[in-house]
Image (cartoon, rainbow, N blue to C red; front, side, top):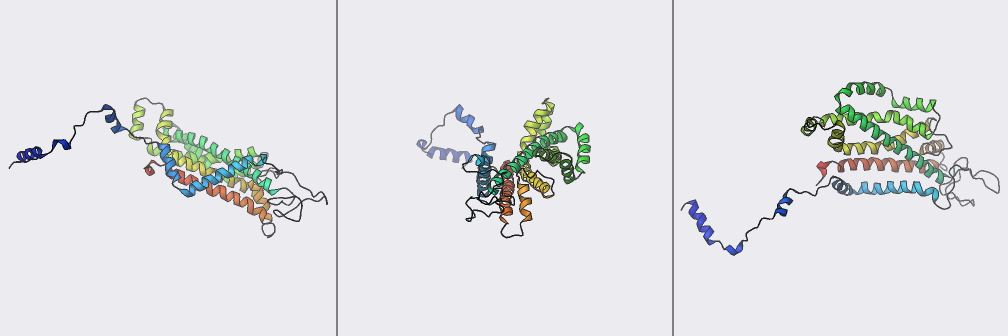
Length: 328
């Protein structure tokens, strides 16, 4: 029996009621090429699967929000006022947290001149976070802009490379010390000094990544079609760098806070009348060997640890989540 005869016999034995003819539906045919994939939705979904990163994100948001609203809460003390015992006329110096022997209540105690550590801690956190965020935003804007032009526009490569080599060979610590020494100590001075060198690493990082993908086929096709350079950079190149850029920005904030602490440690940071985490650490460092006064170092150290660890973990997890290869 031939193959055709076998096929015809099978077809004759099939019950037609078991099958229905499928009609043509144009709307359903269009759905075959449809995908509801969303880059940012997938990024958030992957990020939310990491419980540690989510917990740290909630923690850092709570710290930032409380830092902002703390001065407006009732019964809050001034971070710069020196409190004096009305009975003796003496300053409340080095009062331990919630010391029951005095009528005035200091939640985190006082420092060596009678200032409330609770108020100074949150005021210093506001100052340090402001410095960190300002430096991080500046590094992102300037570093991404220069790095993108450096990596994509070949005519600028030699010029920017020479500028980078000269500026990068000067140690950033020396630049920070010199600028804070010759300028009046202030928050703007600290931000300016950090911004002068902070953008270098971001620019080099973006430049190296753009050089890897700038000559891919879709970018060559865009140039052949006359697409402007600015549009190619913003639409074709930078979206591929979102994960690494966010990671660098997340690490720039605690790095800026660390630089502020370093400058305060060597006596070239903010003035003592401006509370900052660097000033608080520097004040507590002197008393760290006294068991009764270690709380002055413990509280700012906890805040610094929370901010640094949170930004580091969140930045790394978000970088992994933003990678399309990790999307389902």
